[in-house]
Amino acid sequence: MKIKTSIIGIGHLGKIHCNLLINNELAEFVGVYDIVPSNSQKIVDKFNIKNFNSIDELIEQSEAVIIAAPTSAHYEIAEKCLLASRHCFIEKPVTSTVEEAKKLASVAEKNKELVIQVGHIERFNPAIKALSKYPISPLFIEAHRLSQFKPRSIDVSVVHDLMIHDIDIVLWTVNSPIKSIDANGVNVITDTIDIANVRINFENGAVANLTSSRISAKPMRKMRFFQKFGYFSVDFAKPDIDVFRLTNNMNPNAISANMLGDIAELDLGKHILFEKPEIILSNAMEDEQTAFLNSIIKKEKSVMSLDAATKALEVAGIIVKQIAQK
Image (cartoon, rainbow, N blue to C red; front, side, top):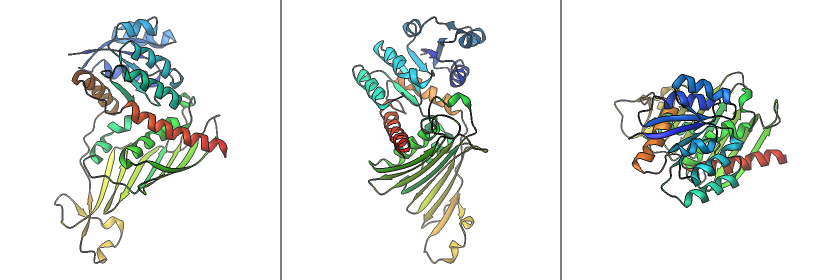
């Protein structure tokens, strides 16, 4: 079974989606639409697919739609798709505002068989997949997501462009209501926030400290999870994960964590072990697409739901508002 799928928005991400979708065995790549016809024509010529004259025409001839248009257009396009009973993959951030995201949820509620997946790609990062095999109950999380400046992303703040990835991972792993948020940020080059830091306190006592910048000399995408009896260090870019655990038993696949210092001199009665889990390399965006299409075929809920994306968007909005008021 192949799902008739089309793509709206042939910018940077849209082109990547096209190059992956054409080879996805679960999809029949029907066609594309872009407000700038020359953008879509190159893809049409390359893959011999349809170049639709309008969004309505594309929706009519598709079962599923990947929305990679600018964020400001997400709500209008997604609403059209849902009202026409079309499955939607929406790139992040899901919409410009929380209100728009909640309106989409109301529309989707009328047709619960529709699959809506949002493009929080780090959920599919091989390092996060390796991390998910461990029991995670973080009490402190520290994240750094730094990028060199790219003009294509200035339609939204660094909070909505980069930090929102880490916000989603934090909300997912902590799984507790937020108690308080304290944010700071600066507009350095653009009219929106270019660098930001936030401290999020949760009701269960967990704390997350997130830093994001889009004006850094060296890129970085790292997150560390500290919890009782161990911590996990995740490098999204490599991808890679280091695991440090306090245990009663020696794991044959682990070694003593001497790199943490002279911990062995303490009489803990336990071992602190260092593990290097196997990372099964894959293309995270390809995995996203496949998960979306599988959800449609198997009639299952999406891995990255509209509700989860809305919660991340809501936190991002609070952060931006706080920074604006300082």
